[in-house]
Amino acid sequence: MLGFLFNDRECRELDYVLRKELDEMLFDLNDKRMDHDIKTAIEARYKIIFRMYARLASPKDISKYARNRMQHQ
Image (cartoon, rainbow, N blue to C red):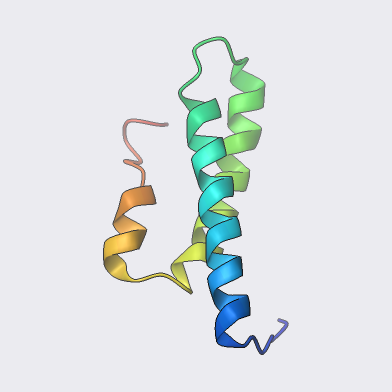
C-alpha cells in the first residue's frame, strides 16, 4: 500500500480528474455500439477508479457515480 500527502489544491485536482474519468467511462458503458469485451474491461477499470474517488468525495458526490450491480452484470 502506498500513501500520499496532498495539499488542498492537489486534492481538488485529483477529485476533478477522477470525476471526469468516471464520466467518460459511464458514457462509454452506455454506448450501444461498444463490444461486450470492451465494456467488461471498462467496467473493471470503473470499479478501481470509483474506489479511488470514494476516498476523496462526500457520500452525496459518491452516490452520483454509484452503479446498480444487478443492472450491469
